[in-house]
Image (cartoon, rainbow, N blue to C red; front, side, top):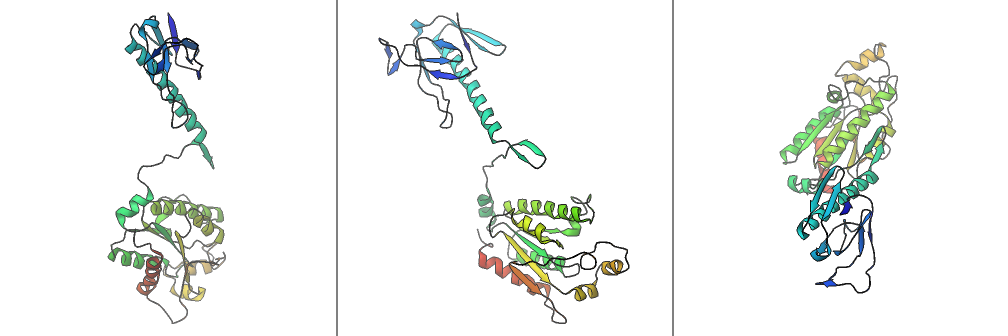
Length: 314
């Protein structure tokens, strides 16, 4: 009784002289499957995504004794050509599966503390979602001092785009700290992690084809630049609300400047912690002294930029 083990390499041999032909195929010994030679079987092709394995066989029954196919603990005996072909097909599936596992293992990666992870590609891509929404996904990153009007601008911008039939979502700094980032303080390292997380979430929204509006102080240039690097060129639109500290402090809508001046809040941006203004942002909106621009007018400035760059169409 001949045994076929569905393991190990599949190796092709060369035809022997004087072999019979069945149709276009040779019936002589031409290959090995696993560790055992096959007589009277022609293996005509292995194609695994252009690499290894699609198994087609032609069997001449007069050359075959009953064979036994084994895969791990499962065994079966076959006495006809159909069963034999099925056994070989089953063995090829084992080989295919092992090739797939090997390919997956080769594509595994490590990201920070995450090991053995594989990116799973979706059949619906960013382009498809943008076609559905008739807009292009991007991140509008509004930065500036506390009290500069970031949240107010974000809401005006979202409303203006909504009236134009465009889908947006606001990631407000305080709102995100109510949930996703509620475990973070305002220490330097936690502020950096706060920005990183929001940047990653904003990237997902942009990939979904949504116009994401991130509104937060984000005082450090390197953290904003790291978020910019997450997105394709042009999809990160930095909007700097250039409002002098004295104007922001005079507004003090949350009473935070007063608390900071009294020493009740430590590390407050603009008082005892620096704010690093952008050097090469896409849009600068200035508010100086009594020369104030309404939130809706500032929002229109941003919307005009989006129209010019083609983000309001697919």
